[in-house]
Length: 181
Ligand code: NI
Picture 1 (tube, protein in one colour):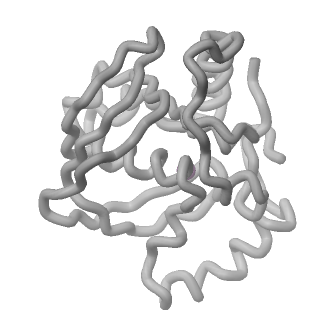
Picture 2: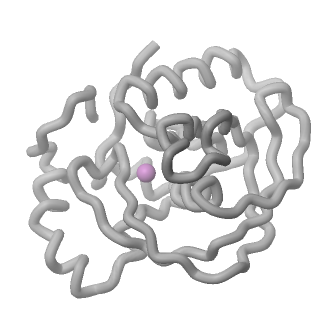
């Protein structure tokens, strides 16, 4: 099932999500829906608040980014009850976009390396370190779980320059190839 994606300005995107219970009903259906909604919008990551849920879940498939970083080729992962426990490495400036903020791309500074604890789609626990492009996308999606959007992390002057575009998105005055809410 493909769901509409909530746009910048919707209050759900500012909520801090909660860990889900291990008996969460129809979890596999939800994960399928998240991947389908993400693929339909040609995204590489999607967090549950972007489809209106206050659940600590994100999905990522970096296959389209294999040319940027070979580690992306078979990087399809689900992160349930995800918690980043360490961030280090050199800070990297890289351009980001977001399905909830269509047609805006800005450079964001983030740590190059993270350690994250999470459950996979089979509710198996993992404690892993990621670097490079995977670390970048995980941090972007993970921010959504804490009510943070990438435009919160860009320099004030750049944020001033995109203010009117953000205001248009808040009024749903935006061209988009996928359904939005
Ligand atoms: Ni995003």
